Image 1 (cartoon, one colour):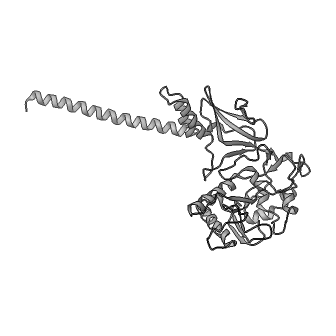
Image 2 (cartoon, rainbow, N blue to C red):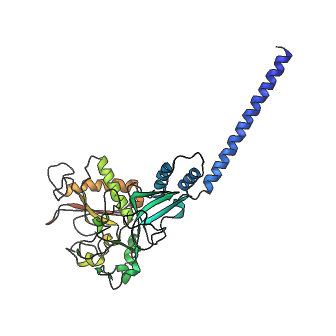
Length: 360
């Protein structure tokens, strides 16, 4: 090899080494910068959308709106099937869920242009997202603001009779200490009207499914509803579907029960004095996908009995095991005059199982 060739090779090798070291340093600096940005971000979803909004090469506004819609309405629970967010205040969605350059608008009318920047009073609000000149309704998600508990006077809100919770009379301390369950008075009430009663709270359930079965001609009605319970119901249905059960005909026999109704409405026999139904985190359900008014033959033994409710209980057991934060009660009930077998499901915070009457 000539000396001239050797010098050329040395020069090329030096250039390659410099490029390699430079690339290595650039990769380290870039990684650290990205890590720092992620650590300081209030919301990863909001940060990603903000970056896209300020990027000259970003996709179309329509695409950005789709992404922002998913960020704003992303609180869909463990099941991914919740369709509402419930709040005790009128501030609207938290700021960290709204990307920079976007605004959430609220409306209770049919015209999306008739909007406000925040839900101004208790009620069920339709939601839209505004980015630049584009306004995009979020058609499958609503924001619900509660009527405060203080609105109840002498056991009523307006003409709707509710009654009083045991906590208002100081009767729950021993029970709470013994079980760890919460028996605090509700934070507030969902105001349900003929116009909003069909609002979906999740994929399978509407507001009207959980209303107390009394005062049929009195409107508005008032409802206590815990979304964790609705989320659990959806997880139970998902589990049943995975085990071959047609859940399209799920029915709620009893959802929220006002203290007044729990004590004396309908047939109060077998109802617990501290029923979870009064706290909005319990529901009695059955599956009636053939629309004959009673539980389907879920175990395919050719008859309708409490053993069909046990099929649902098995799904509840699997959901409780997978999601201990939703653990609660499951009570099996036999058929009686006026109804077939059904199951009570709740999220009381500890495991409870029973058969027959009582404990609801």
